[in-house]
Length: 600
Image (tube, rainbow, N blue to C red; front, side):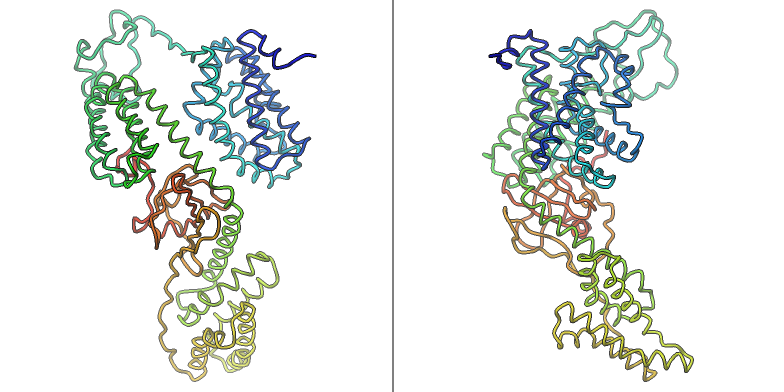
């Protein structure tokens, strides 16, 4: 009997590795699909068949021209174009781009190794046989197999984005290790030599000279001359400027209170080695030094200032800082290891999210309904709305509107009836001046009060609670009937966000508003952060929550934070985070934000 595993092992290196990578791709995608609930046999078969077909077609191309001529990559099987659904196509294209950015250096190295493996000369980045473009073409096949309509397709892509990003990043790391073990090195594309008589183009961030430089008499030599022997005048100002930009990061380091003192001390020692790297090559040296310093600071901030020195991640950070001090010529490798540690921590945080998603989705629907009810009251109200009525609507009627919206939506008769009652109450504060109109207004007050009471009863309020809620409005009406000026009422203060008791596994708690509050989120980076970002939240009680944003709902109104060190999980509305961020009680754990330094 034939053994396919043995047969694959007997193949030459190139086809054997290609088949091994193909098998790993399909295995990872099958795990992803099953974890997402797409375990129907026919769906899986069509999904994996499309991925395999995309892989095989891409693996058969040998240069960029072949990629561009293979119109299937842009118009049919592997392509993201679909003439019947442009919106889905655009979202699928955007997803492929985000996945490529998400996988970063791992995908770049893997693409270069594939160029070596497949003997490609000038392969496009999108030509990687296991790349996001091939995977996204398979997502289209899975969506078609599941029979999704247009709206379901878009929600399907939203659900896929984060778990697929983690799946592909892990796959690309695995394939890089496999190829490295097999001796497949990344292929470096050569830059064309500038023709004789033309000056080499300046780096993109090099300032233009004050006057045109005379053309060189001979082509520049291939090797870069060391800084000590190169002419100092043209290179010194940009090198010094680059060194000073990184110096400012080191100057701000003592004010960074989100990392441990031990890590801050270790990072401070890197100033001089990094400066030498920058002076040697102000373009690449600055990029590597700045990126590594920012990455180490951000990682340290995810651990917090009180992190024990014996924490495994803290030990790794200390080791990376030590290597950067001793081997500054290897900053690129150290940066890759820092990225791997960051991905490891993100993956551990994301693993805590799934058990809490169901509760988070319910909380998001409640938040959405609460905001819709708030918007309705704000639209009906005006600057001359009496405080008594405003207080009743925001304190007592808002919960009823939110409940009706949550259970029935804004098209239901009960929602429309409750909205009409709110409008009637607001208009009741302005009695007509003509006798006939005033008589109708007066005769309508008992029915209005009765209907409002019925609404409060539906909320479960007893008679005493209903009377207390209605009392300011009744006093207002009595004053209007007597022709007196209504008594002043205190302005209703917005409800602050509140922290719930533990609701589920991993100490899951909900941080949200339960009543009337501002609906605008603002533009604070901590309140608008996306998945994968790290935040620290000073909660109203207990220890601050330091976690990775591992989930964001369909309406983007709710997020979930998870801490891989303590396994704590927090579900919070963006409104609640924005409220804290105004007082610096919710902060983005990003080196550029923590050090208040602009990007280079």
